Image 1 (cartoon, rainbow, N blue to C red):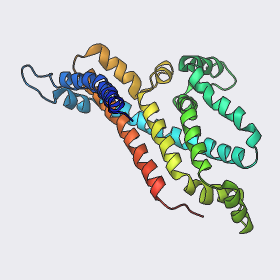
Image 2 (image 1 turned 180 degrees about the vertical axis):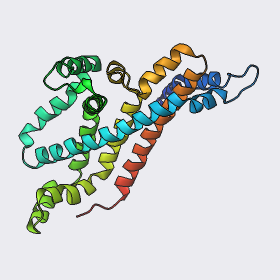
Image 3 (image 1 turned 45 degrees about the vertical axis):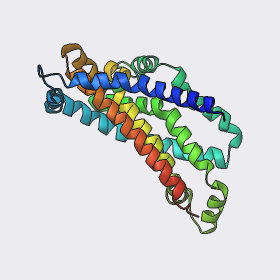
Image 4 (image 1 turned 30 degrees about the horizontal axis):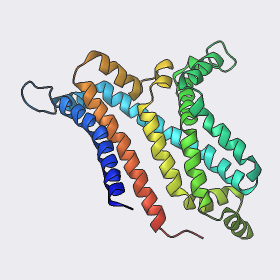
Amino acid sequence: MSIWARIAGWAALLFGLLYFFVPLGGLFEFSLKARRGVYSIDAYLSVFADPQFQQTFSYSVVMALVTIVIGILIVVPTAYWVRLKMPWARPYVEFLTLMPLVIPAIVIVFGYIRLYNTSSWLPLTGSVFGTNVLLAFGYTILALPYMYRAVDTGLRTVDVGTLTEAAQSLGAGWTTILGRVILPNVIPAVLSGAFLTFAIVIGEFTLAALLDRPAFGPYLQRIGANKAYEPFALSVIAFAITWGCLSLIQLVSRFSKSAPRKA
């Protein structure tokens, strides 16, 4: 590689970093100007002291955890079975898991409202619990492309057929094989999908707003319409959460490369 190619590469990297971090720095700097003439963290203290922030953030965290559990229960058995018994179905499953990237969230939520309103055969929107269930499954659909690809990539790194045959030779059933043989070997991949799911749920707006749920995404919109400095502080907080999840994915990936595989 010539010296000019290296200079061009470093220049492109520097431009990308400046393009990304300069606006972020301006955002963070403005969030510190809530007190006239000096920098302060008053906007952050105001956000953390807001009962609605605590309520909406806690609600979104709980919904994210529920979504992760539902996603694991659906994706891990499906990806395992497709890889073990139905490799011919893999293109069709991948196509289905990509559909949430094509269909807008607003179309999904309006379909939910139309199918599960109070006059339908399954009136989920008629109760708080039913609406929460509907929202959790909506989040699961939005996170499906990321969870499925993370788990599928993890399954590629292990010999699923040999592990299954060895477990069956010892008398293990399918539940035992999935829970005690396959899942421990793909835990890093599952965690990567879980962190991505968490980041998606925390910032999601459309489903929660149209289903009228007290989630963190609609709270971000409401606070942005009524206050000056707090929205910028919330944006920094949301950015930190997202990058925290991405950092955890990197740690998990490094751990998965260094940890020995279970046989």
